[in-house]
Image (cartoon, rainbow, N blue to C red; front, side, top):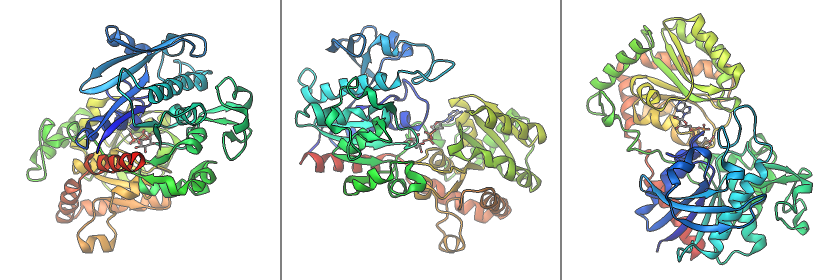
Length: 474
Ligand code: ADP
Ligand code: GLC
């Protein structure tokens, strides 16, 4: 039992993060350790990571990685075994993993093909005696890795592709097929062709031995046109090898007992103090529930619905703090709300991990009105902190929050507020319900107790990944 997994991704906490992908990739190796599966994570040596790896040993060399050589450096970051692909012509650049400060890199297809090529090479041949049993690829950035195993030899390695977000598909024009080291005979709709071009995500979907996505509901949604974003047929065709494994959250990092002031299910005084501190920090005076949004500000997240529902929520006594950045139009929309409701609505445009902890600790509710949500992590932070989630019934949100329906209230199992469909009307009703629940302190306390008792750690998910690896390699 047990074995070795090479995980390949473009982001990994604590090294580089733009979203939940990084949290998951960074948490899996330690979560799996107890199951007997050893995982190393391969990611690009972006400019921000090169200095830190300067003295790491070189464990792999590649002569021709599309315009220059590459080498892999091995190290350890906070207990996680890391392999960094150092190919300066691809990764030693200003900006984030995918973009310069002004625009998306035009050569992303090749940049991440290089990562996938090296991943497949290491998986196939092994690294100084460390031979993986499974290559685990994450999202479009690693989608070509299973394809390279399939078309260039797999060395006995099984492959798993995890879809964290179908919206990003890694598109390249058809004429790049040969450049990307993919075979011409596979350029047809059942294999690599995708709407006349190439998609690295589709390449991974059709060539991997198993496909997972990050919640059971999203796994089912992905086979439907409303959510599949063009790939629904591809995924449905592979239905027998598709499964949903819910993400966990790092309960060491997200721990109310480790916040200042500390609190927990048995002593909520610290949470009340955290709320007061939060109101002081943001100059708010909120008689009703204090809600937060901590999110990328994009269409996916339903942020555009806020202007329609917030005014009534404020009128009912509520308050709101938004922490996030993204779409300039959505940033302006939330700024506008803060200007309209001083003392009740505050906005911080930016990314701030420490502030996000203060928000979850001090707030009464977290809003996640996503149009689609493969898993979502912030509703789980909310559960753990007794900060009741208000969520749309999609993807992982539907799998993690029990809405305060009459039946759930009667059974005493509700942990938050849910709504469907994802529109301003249903979201508005959910916010009205939140106000109503807050006016009933005993009921509110019951929901909070339920929420905080829900297990949101990695144990169950790590066991599910381990048993998947076992099945594949048996
Ligand atoms: P997604 O990956 O789609 O952005 P998730 O809910 O899976 O959504 O993960 C988002 C992660 O990023 C969470 O850990 C969340 O707390 C964090 N996050 C998002 N925006 C911010 C921000 N502005 N400041 C701090 N943390 C943020
Ligand atoms: C993606 C999804 C999010 C999920 C995260 C980690 O970014 O948008 O729902 O939680 O990946 O799997």
